[in-house]
Image (cartoon, rainbow, N blue to C red; front, side, top):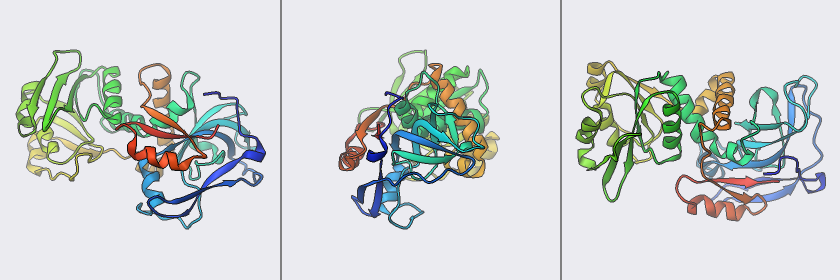
Length: 337
């Protein structure tokens, strides 16, 4: 994407949610001239913004927070610095940046606190960066911060073909871990494999526990990444190593699992929640440091960008439709440039 282009002032606009619904009433509205920046703020020419699952729930009124309408949705934006307040010394006009968790991202202009911005490496496209925040930062935060993954440890990734799973496989391999994967196959089956090893094996869902035992041996996995949940979590926990760690990422399979606590006692293992939204609220500085480190891994080629589709921001109906019809794991990204 051209990082020098910006929308002329006379054409600047925001997407404004006027009424919650499915679909919501979202209209394009011209922007007024920008108000003076606060001393620590940075004004960004937004080139693209993510259409996240959180945003999808929010504009329907199904999220735990319901901002009064009208409001500008969007939490993740990427673009180029236009200007900066007198105390915002880290960035200068023309710098590529990304913001996450700054409300109002669905707009051609966004004023954000300097400490909430992260530089985007030269080798990373803006759409690639903003489309990969959720999956890649979750993988980074889970494995390197929460699990404190060490070289030589064994990592089992459930749902390894999803966006988070793929990023976990890449980060774990880069960290020097042995990586094992679980991918849903045809029907009610799962494909189990060791990265860099044999071609794996396919087992029925009812035999997942035994299949993992055969894959991992009695040693088990030091870390299990679980974005799947449901009945599959217990099968993975039963194959944790002594002092193993279960990373709870999500519940894509449906139900929230109920894990017998005696398994945790006998294995001396722990359950760790992986929630980047909580990290943003509770430890904002840690959130931005980890986001910057994750983008550096993308810039160095360790992490490949999550699949995404660019949709013109002025055609929100197309974006709304593609959110549900795009291939699984493909992020919809609104293009403002």
